[in-house]
Image 1 (spheres, helix red, strand yellow):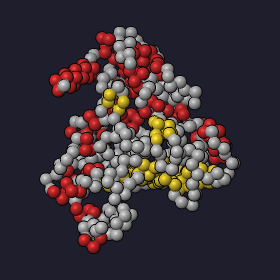
Image 2 (cartoon, helix red, strand yellow; image 1 turned 180 degrees about the vertical axis):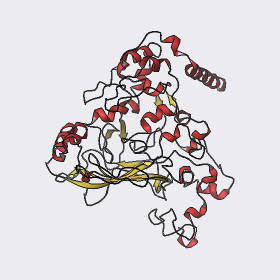
Image 3 (cartoon, one colour; image 1 turned 90 degrees about the vertical axis):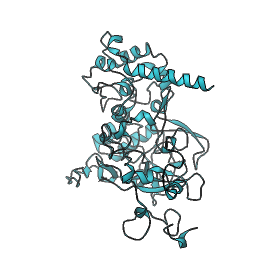
Image 4 (cartoon, one colour; image 1 turned 45 degrees about the horizontal axis):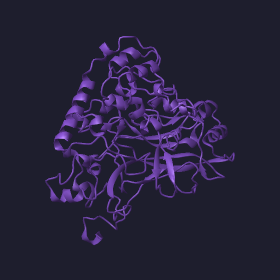
Length: 453
C-alpha cells in the first residue's frame, strides 16, 4: 500500500512538473481569435478540465449548506445570491460583478453554466501577465488582449493569477479582505512570511480536479474544505510550554497576524445612505477617497489591529428574505462559538461595518440595481424596485437604512515569529490592550487568578 501511495504521488508530481514546464508555443500553432476558441483548444488535450471546473464553488458561486442556524433545510448559498455590505448583491448587477467569474458572458440570469466553452482557462493559467478581463464585461477578456500569446504561456497558477480577482474584490485593491493586496505578488518575509519565502497560493490551497482547498467564512458557513495553519504546523510547535498551551484555544493567526492592511489601505466602513450628492470630500491620511457620489461615504484603515472572536468552524448567515430588527446592527455573517466550546478558538477578524438599504415595511434587506441602475439615475426607489424584481422579493415602495456588520477572517500577511504578539499585548496592566475580556465571556484578564473560571 505504501509503495502504491508513493508511486501515485511521484506520478502526480511528474505530471504537474511536466504541465508547468511544457512549452505550449509548439502545441498551439494557429492563432486564436475568441476566448471560446482558447477553451476549445485547451479541452483538446485536457478533456475533463471544464467538467471538473463546473463542479466547483469558483464556477457555481454557490454551495449547498445544511444546518444553517435559524433556518431549516438546505440552502444553495454563495457569492451568487448572498448579501455583503460592499456592493451588496450580484443579482441584477451581473456584468460588473461577474467580471471576476472564471467564465465568459454571465451578463444576466440566463447564463448557461453547462456550456464548457464558457469556462475561462486563461484567468487562472495565463503566465504571460498580459491577460486581463474587461471590468465591465461579464467575464469577457479586455479589448486588445493577445489570446494566442496568453494560451501559449499557460502553466500552474501563480500569485498574480489568484490575485487578479482576490486582491481586487469590492471594486479596488484590498477593499474587501484586508489581508490580500498586490504586495503579496512579490512580498518580503516581513510582509508575509510564507509568500516572502517563495511559497505560492497553491502550496496551501492545494487542488484536485480543479477543487481548490479553502473557502472564505464571509460566504461559507460550515467546516468543510477549510485550510488551517495546523494543516502544516500541528502539535507543540513552540519551545515554550505556555505558548503551546495557548494554541489549544487560540488560533495561530491571532498572534501571528498582529496587523492587517500592511501595504494598501482597506475599507472599514461604507455608508450608502449618503450617496447621490454632488459634494466634494477630502481624501483621508492614506490618500483614499472619503466620499463618492455613486457609493456614499467611506472610512479606511492601514496597519489595522484585528478584532477577536470565538470561532468553532461554523457561522451564522443572513439569507435573502430574512427579517430583522432595524433598530439593531444586522450581522450579515457571524462566527459562532464560545470559550467553553471544545472546538472553539480565538481568531482575528476584519469587521466591515456599513449602512445599507432595506424595506421598511417587510424589514428585510433590499437587492438594489446598481450597475446601470442607481449609478445612472441616482434614484433609490427605482433601483430597489428593479433589483427586487430580479431577486424575486416583494418591494413595498418604502425604504430606509440599517447598520450592518460583516466578518472577514484573516489568514494572510502573516508576520515572522519575531514580530508575533507578546504576552503584554493582551495581558497585564497598561493601555491599548487588544483583548476585550468581557466581550469574550470572561470577567477580566485571565492572567489574574481572581478572574479565572
